[in-house]
Image (cartoon, rainbow, N blue to C red; front, side, top):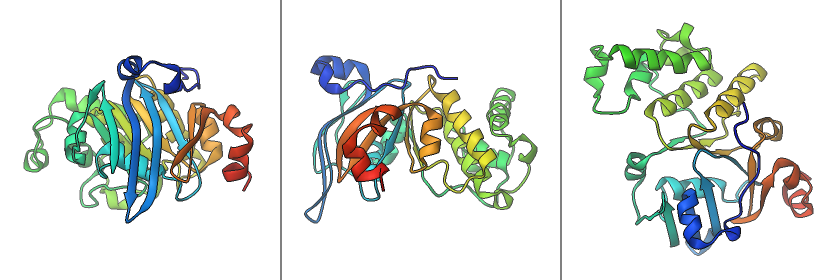
Length: 264
């Protein structure tokens, strides 16, 4: 399933012009401060088109803040953010979503009163509205697409089940399926393996690996076995800064990383 090698191209290895052309999302001199506390201090960060990257680090390292800045949820105190080579202003999270950034938070957010299929209908891109969805306005092509995605995570058998009856792992999978259906260029996925059974963890890893090459993906994760399973490039954050980047093997051999995170 691996479509790319688990390497990370450092932005420092490229000219500034090549950075803008090579990266889907590119951050430069990004600082985020809250009441004088510096939560994020990123010199350079770039993610290629269709690249899968895992971001790890201790609690409070800045992982969620990094995704908040990328998604538009939190504006940077200063710095520059580029999307497809174009410099962005302080776009909101809804504006960034329209540009092509989708986000899945750690706690699944699905509509409990709706079935699995109805939740998927609401995630369809375009001009669909809630009442259209509930009246069954989905066409044949959309129906096939929904079922195809649900099949990837073994949820087709639960298509008519209200979401409140799903397990935590099934809810995690459903929310990611909804995100995929919306078709963003970049997926931000926060701790997808949290609370999953071994079987569900394998399904989630397989899905993310399958998506590599179709979307750019940033995964925040604490489960090192899951990170190894993804076999992707890794960015290590510590105290709001990028400590190192590389393959999981390279990261594991870095003494600073072992001291700050992996060795604990």
